Length: 523
Image (cartoon, rainbow, N blue to C red):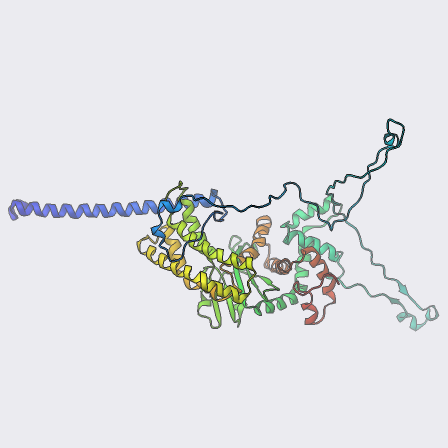
């Protein structure tokens, strides 16, 4: 009994201390559970936003650049109050249909009155005083045709019946073809591959299209053609690889791909399609590279002894670039920004006069960096001028943003959505600020992300590749087609010209002249 060992005051004090200890322990657990509940609610809101929310990350049009060296926390509700804005006079563009392109051929259809209608009620014939023209856009549906190659034979009649007669027959040489003894013309091959790798039409859908045109063309045949033509284009990819490594900047990204017959892997396992964009800035090159894994060794092998700048997202497979000699690793502000956008979205809408959220303040900082880039584009600045502009205007914003992030990181739970956004940005900071030193670089890796998007769109339609050989063939076509698009070429026209000229190529110089950035489609 307590009363036997302690007197009443001591026992009461002991019980009070024990009670205070237990109450504090309960309070700690309550704070922990409240924190966990808040974190779980954020995760639920984040998942709901991903599934059902708006996908665009575009900032509001009226977003203003933050004043330099001003503490964002000092902003009050009055800072967000609307002010009178003077809008300069402008000319309103006339609404209505855009004129049809002038380069399209015109077919004139004359609509005239009958002779009876041309006669006036007074008995005289009316005189034409003008005309009224309206235009309609028409299309001629695709149609199939057969090209017959007729090769005349010649023989010497004087040698008939003699031993010389065996070698006396002469015939014009057969035209060189991408696939010898195949019925596929360059135009048909270009049409099929443009359909799949530009318009994302799987071969089984094209098979149905050809049936409607009166031709039976099996998907297996088209798949066979793709792999054979891809093999013939392999020398182009080797030259394209060298040209990418010759540029000052390489953008890299990767996305998943399902390959059914990948050796030593299950059907549901993931393989990867990598994309690298580089080369001279005025003649960009792209290479898609298929690999069964996502290891950084893939990028390391592709880059080899490259010296220059490499821009990527925050994937750990690119960490080797931070320690590789003669390479500057540049990060992606679009990825950092995306994490703050997620925080702002799950925070819900805020009414007028409310103080800015921390996520909105971070987005304002990043938006200020992009306004500097827009200013450089609008003014048409050269590389050195862009670097000078960034040193003058972007670096102070970056320094102020870094100071703000450091302060917020101390008081923000790291497991929360906002905490993760801060942690990601601070961990990537050296990469994120590196773009300011290179006028040819941009703040983000959108060049690679935009390049990977056509492949992702196609993947949604054809879902998987049956065999690694098919995945490698797809990589070849995407490389050539996206390089052609990056250099302003129409994909079908480029592929058709390529397939007409490639069988004649013999030397490295011949192959190089057929790359999208060097080819002359007018020849």
